Length: 100
Image (cartoon, rainbow, N blue to C red; front, top):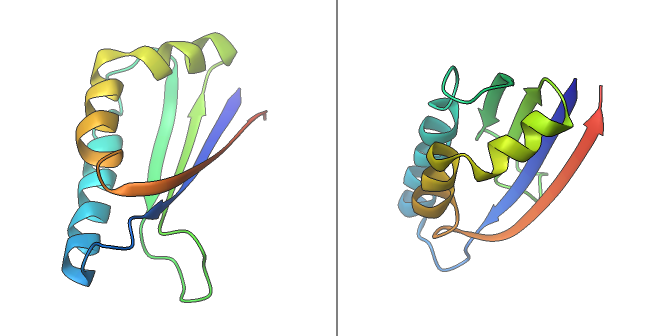
């Protein structure tokens, strides 16, 4: 199995209300991919970090293998969520992929 962990920071210019809406949209969009992408075993988005956090959103996903991760990255449904729900609202992205 492969773990795919992403941390995002939201854009500074977003208001608190816009940040909350963006976080909810990211969560719903990414978690909505469950059962739609081959090899995607689990997907969870955390949007309730503590004030001590320096990231706003975390994706914690598990895929069957590295080939599944590569397929997930280019899957049209994932790309659509990334382009409409994630990229317009985020300023930084940190990724860690590893064998679990």
